[in-house]
Image 1: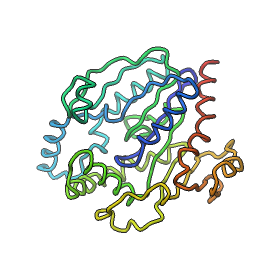
Image 2: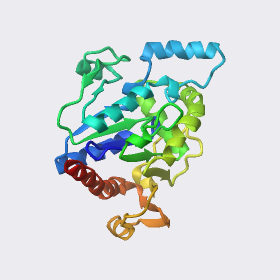
Image 3: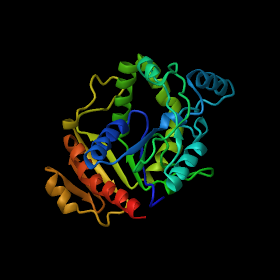
Length: 290
């Protein structure tokens, strides 16, 4: 954690909706005139697409059916920790990009399924913004949660998370339902042991809960819409959170616990704007005074 160069970390699994949260923060940064350096969790995968396929096959032959991108050892978390630490101390660092498709290949001058070259951050940034799988990991090797100033978890209920992943991977990556299901099953061990423990480290969690039937996510024809959902927002430390103001500003919301507010799903962006704008302002203003 650094007063001079703050770090915001948004953490959630594949299909959770972290990219949507990033869009909200981009709006906040533009409106407030803050310059943010953004890094992606995919950039810290240990293997490119071909090498990951080979590693998966090797693990399966050795009897390990649980290895996935969710696993700690499938990622260079020590490198991510080093970048968090360096940025917090100096405001500098380096990152790269994982190239998912042909459109990104043209942008980053690298083949799909590979990484771009490491490159330095732009200078004179106000903060660092991370979005990915492992932004609040605490284990025997790394402690990323200690280095981030604001940690946000995006955690839809599990059936909804699966529906979102199935629809995204089928539409954007051409996978079959069976292929996505196999991936979900393979990732379950690491989801429990590597992803879920991060959400006790996060400062604010957003959990979208559908209010329509999602009993069998593998045959769901549509992703429940925002208007067919509620969002539970949990604050690890509710001190200083103006809950009466939030419930007044976000129509249809209510307190479910002393540290939790429930809102209509269609007002999630508004809630994030109200909650995080003053937090980001405070981080940047304190960094300029440090």
